Amino acid sequence: MTETANELRCFWCNLPGAGDERYGGCIKNGITFCWQSALCPFNVCGEILDKLDTMVDNYECPVCMETKKALEMPNCSHKVCLDCYKTIYFGVSNLEKHCIYRDLTLPQWTYELQLDEDGDVIENEKENEHDKFLWEEMNYEWEDDKRQYEELIMLRDSLMLNRPLWMNVQEIINFENELFRITSEYRNKEDNYLANRIIGNKSCPLCRAK
Image (cartoon, rainbow, N blue to C red; front, side, top):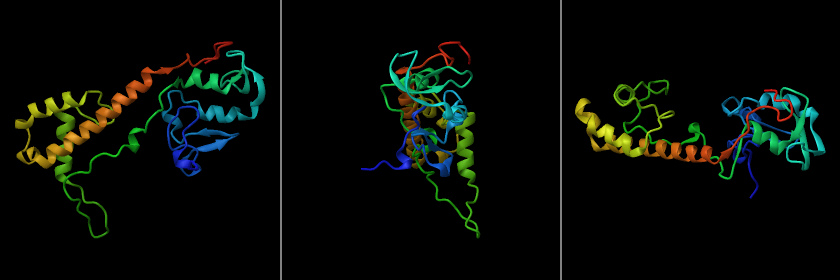
């Protein structure tokens, strides 16, 4: 099956959804760049693009001593092969990086959305109240929370007497359980990926320019 642009991964940071110019990605000199370059471990994608005209073939890399395509480092004129470049600035892992947070399929809010006469979603007071409870009482923000699923469930259960009765119906409990499960599993996968990543010190191995 032919790989579509949406399935491509950034050569540098391994994020999915790369290479599509509609979303800020691109493919230059056969190298796929992601549309999330600002979120990469090292914000070097733009600098790499600026250096692409320095790329050479059949270059003996001074780091791994293999003959490959090479490119100038972002802050000096030394060249290393693309694989060493990637290791130095972004790291490599034997695990494939999964999706990013914005691509997670989170559970849908349990109450039906109301639309105004123009078809726009009317602000849902109960959803706002629920978000406030998660933030203020549980200190929970799904993109950043590092707690395990069991920890979140235990904390939520201990606070059920502190919130409105409508939040304690099974429909809301199920919604929260699924939300906590998905985000906790993502965090575990992300931590495992990072733990298996080998990364350099983000500087030129020849002159230490950063």
